Length: 308
Length: 231
Image (cartoon, rainbow over all chains, first blue to last red; front, side, top):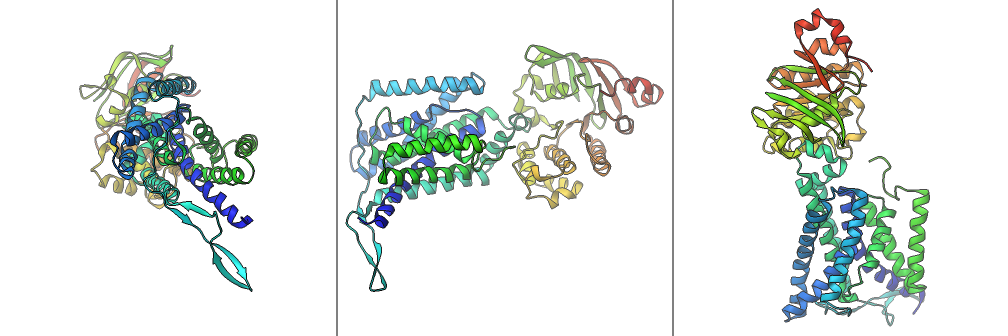
């Protein structure tokens, strides 16, 4: 394949990674932004999303599309509910203390991981995509000074991958509307800005925290349901999304929603392109190096403000 | 109306307030006066439920506020203008007023009223609060608390660091609130403001109430008042 079509293929693969990463990282950013909690267990909510998606589709049987549609709705709700319970039984009890919540969420990480190993087992299991048509993509070439289209061999994407990109974009727009246009969003942003003042104006801060923790986990679970037909569900699959989400949140700037999305695009696309042209390991090395550079030269992140 | 009875409070194990008692009446301004570190801001925070009480209680028209979760305190009608304003800086003027209106959701007129009292805020309506000048921010902090339609208004040094024209606007609004029958608790360090505004003064020293003065007593014993001011 020529360089041009090859680059387009790599970019499309990167866009799928970016879409899923943007969802997962927004959940992490939301939790950190509003609650100041560094949720080390965020990747496990992602893993639970994938495992539960396998479980739901397997239990229901029937057509792949039906099972997947149910999983898409039920799984984020289940995982979100589990996160709310976790918030109320663990994080609230340690008063959302920044240091202690890190240790507590590490504990939660291992509990979720080991319980999954004990019940679901060590195998990676696939979920059948609801639809998976291969779409050949055209590329342009110049023949006798005129532009014409042709379909290079191997340049294609599945309809499911395109749907993942579309669904992620839709959910992110929905989240943005929720945060900026709704009363609930106003409560969350006010709590994020000043916890005590939020209390002083009647905002039930602890309920907002429980909701935000649930919403953050549900975002990770939704991302996992979307990716599991491409990746398979496995009890250790939470590590990479956690690392990449932290990278994205640090590069984007803590608490900056547009920054998180742009950083997810940057990391996701570069991950796709570098993985295809060089190696996935190099992609991770470069992303981690970028975090180090950002922390040294622009600690507030590329889009974060220093004093908010 | 708002009554503190034997309130002791502090930060962690450090006790700041020792058995503070006073009452603020509807339609009156009660000035809390004391040197830096006397416990004025701590008193206000204790009323808001932002600090746990070690002893005593805070009641509003017979309801014991201090046994309620902090977010219920404003729902009973206590508006708070904190020291240093503490606006939601990343939110717009309109959104800050909306937060003030949260416990009072159906009342749409209140924002119009606030904007008529502080027309400057109408000009800045869609601007972020952290882009406003100091005086405008103080107007917004006051407007935000007024949006609650409070029965009691707690003002913690509302004119600190402001230029004279802004001080006048804030004082006029304070008088207006009092005239509407609101009980105002004002933490103030400027002698001229206290003399002009206060119906009663509570003198705070080392976390204890050392005495109270009425308007006429303030005129008779100006030194007593002055000795409790300053750093």
